[in-house]
Structure formats: structure tokens, C-alpha cells
Length: 204
Length: 204
Image 1 (cartoon, chains in turn cyan, yellow):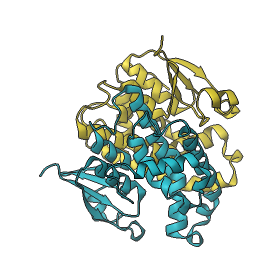
Image 2 (image 1 turned 45 degrees about the horizontal axis):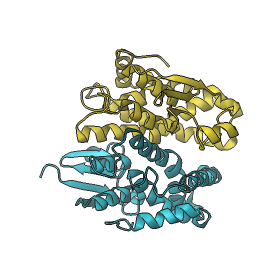
Image 3 (image 1 turned 180 degrees about the vertical axis):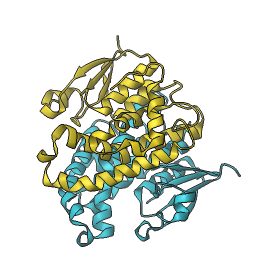
């Protein structure tokens, strides 16, 4: 079938999980091919030539076409669904939080989790070591902004779950693995519970 | 008028220019309020309370609502226009390049321009100094990926300009201010010329 969906992924990656969560909430079947990023399996010539010249996962394969970037894959899957608001401003607000996730959240919160829980603090380069404090502060800023926003509403945009919630959930709910203390963010904790109760939810 | 558009910006920022370029190509009038980020004018209590709790520009004001994140503002302005492909996969590819821009391009290419051309290399912190080489390598990777992609097509997605081109142009065309050598990327140079010939184009 020309539009069969295959996710090229590392199961430990929150960026890959986002796509699986989107598909699950939409009831959309998704095959998977697994790679170990710590073993360099996304940097092989075969992967570079045939899956993603950027050497990264996730990549969503749609038939014989390949789509890198986790949030773009979520947009593809959810196109036309209720996970994307129809209202013009609300849709733009959803994108606001999706770009915030990739610029201000993931590079701090996900990277610290990867460095501390997967690579190991003693194996980091001096350059990585020197960035830990800045990433801890920027990550805490991102979580505080989310917590303040959620003080007044159940979901990031309007009154219903959208891709904004789905892409922010993966690295938020495991932020403690990067040294953040979730109990300091009460509204985020309540929102995490709401996400986990969505019909069709699957765990990471 | 309830949907009057005001851009809260620093004119030196490519992230702000993106939004003005999108509006210009669409023939959409846009007022502006200017701030000097080097003087901390986006970190004042007034700005935090009334414009963006994240303390950053650009912010697109739509009537009395405020939309942070440059690429989200471009999505708002271009909604329903020919700058966003209608085809589902092409639209997702546009988002792929927009997320690539914020994750792999801007934090390297724009940050080096800001550090070297605006802050000054001698005024950088030791932690920033230690990141220059990594950002130079990652920025060169991003430019190479773009150059390879443009070897086979005039625009980033399909056969026509889209928001992907508009958001990648600003920091690409001034990449030399961050120490990158554009002449090494022939396809990017040709694409820059094509962008600058679009009807309605305005310079940064």
C-alpha cells in the first residue's frame, strides 16, 4: 500500500514517542523500525542514503517518502483531525507551543535527561559539562512558563487537547531523569495526569 | 479594529524579519513596536506582564491577543494562502524545514552571528566561547543539508515558495556575519537570489 506508515525510531527517544502517541490517540496503525542511537545506527551510510541525510531519528515513512522532524510527523498524522484546532488564532497558538517545545524545552530538558540518564555525567565532554547549569536554568524557565500557563486552563490551547499537549508531554513527564523536580510544578503534574487519561493513551 | 496586527520586534533580529517578510509577500500591513534586546527592553516588568511572559521578541499582536514564536506568527499570517501547500505531505514537509530551522539552524547560525557581530567575541562568557566550535560545525552541517536539498529543486518544498523558504532565508543570507562562508554553498546562493526576486520582497 502506497501510504503505509513506518516510524524509524529509537524507543528511548521522547521525540519518537510523540509520533506514536499521536498515532495511538488517532487510532492510526504505525509500523516501526528500531535503531540504537548510542551505537550510531542512524549515522550509517545506509541510513544517510535511504532514510535521512541528516542522520537522525525519528523519521516517518509514508509509503516511499520520508519525513524527518518529530513535530512535522505529528502534523502529518493529525492533519484534518480534532488534534489541530480549526480556529486560525488557536491553530497558531498550537504552533507557538510546538516551536517552544523544540527551541526552549527539548534542548534543555531532553538533553539533560540524555546526558545524565543515558550517557552518564562522568562520560560527558568538558564542553557538555560546562553547559549543564545553563540548561538547568533554561529548562526550569521553560517548565515555569508551562506551569504558569496551565494555572488558568486544562490544555495548552483552548479547551481541548491538541498537538501542543502531545509534543510537550513526552520530555515533561520524564523531566526528573534530567534533574528537574516535577513536584515544584503543580499545574504541570495535574496536566500530566489529564494527558495520561486521554482515550487511546499509550505509555512511553 | 479588533484584528489589527502589531509586531513587537528588534529590527536586527532575523526572527522578527521573517514575520515582516511573510506579511510583505502577502501584501498584509503590519505595524511595529521596537525594543532593544541588548538593553534588556524585553525583560522589563511591563513587557513580561503585557506582551510575553517569556521575555522574548518577536511577538505578533492580533487585536488584543499576543502570539510569541516567530514561525507560529508566520503560520498565522499565511494561513489559507499559497505560502502553505495544500497537499498533506507537502505541508508536513514545510513544517519539517520550519522545525529544522528552529532546532538545527537558528541556534547555531543565528547565535554565532549574534555573539560575533553584536555582542563581540571578546565579551563572550567562557561557557559561550567553549561552544563556538560546536556551533560552527553544526551550522555548517545545517547549511550543507540545505545545499544538498536545493541541488535538485528551486524551493524547499515542491515547485513553489512556501514558509519553509521564508523562515530559512533571514539567517542564511547573513550567515557570513557568524563566520560561515556562503560561497561554499552554491545552491544556497542561487536560492537566496530567487527569494530576493519574489514579488513583494523586502530586505532585512
